[in-house]
Image (cartoon, rainbow, N blue to C red):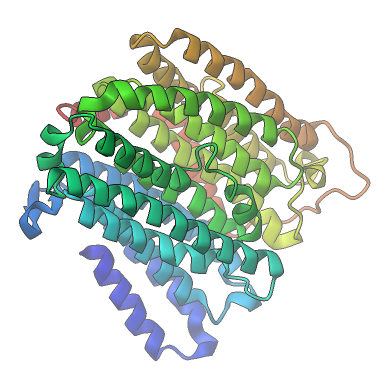
Length: 462
């Protein structure tokens, strides 16, 4: 309700602001989002609405808070880009579209039945396509928007077809009512396959990942960061919840599916990331590989598994937004987005190089950054269920990922360039956003209380 309120407030302000003063909406939008984020951490009372279609629990409130923090960072990191001349008339649209998708994600996470889940999914997806096509005069951006809307329509249709089969075999759409009626009948298995395929598109799991790199490359960097972190995080949260509740009785079946998809996603994501020169495509395939690592927690099928998924997603938000923050500010100032453009970056912009290095080390799982603890817990969750070969394959892929992350770090720290990126000073908003990301990568890894809170809230879900 607070998100809807600030969306309405920004819409009213947009109506009365003349075109020459659209930039004045930036600071109020950030302040309002910060207030909503802070209010989210106040004690709340669990409850239900619309006959149980919408459910608010301590776990769902925490998941929303995680997404709110990520969106707030995206808002802060986008200021420098929004102030550019080509965006000055569309600033309010950026905030309104982002908030609309976040509201849809809230519906998804709090859904108590598949109808509310699907409404939230569509509300979270359609505005992102408009954001991907933000730079409509650029061919790649327009292509990204078209590809995303077509792929989203296809995946939503497949998912909805699966949901219709679930309704046909159970006679209800409510999660709590469906769970006891899942018997593993052939039509229910087919329904699950369609549901899984639809969600795999959203999370970019192999072989449903082919749209990811093109959309990430074509969309503006700040939109790409939102798409890769917030959108994917929300999809992972609700996907895990539904697997652990609705489809818990056929866990033996879906664990085998996830076993194979995990190996394919991690391996193919890593192998293709090694071949990329464009940093947005590089981070796209990196995010595909990271989605594969998240599946290690899901296949854990336990309270520990759910905890590790949430914990790793939290770490991933700070790590990936840190990397995209650096890519975004450099792209906005210089237009350079390739790895070899970063040759000698440390000599001209040491602080940005340091943030990029920490972010990539966290994504690679190098201690003592939070990414190491996130992957360690994921491996632990899978190993506790006896998936030792899967954990071994994941460990080998972690070593492979370290290689291509080091390629970027090598370019910044060791390579020389005749024309390195010139020294420039980031604006205050960007520095605050990057500082929050670095703090998150360090603090989450050492503050064991954060993990304990997530673990306690996950109790009883599985």
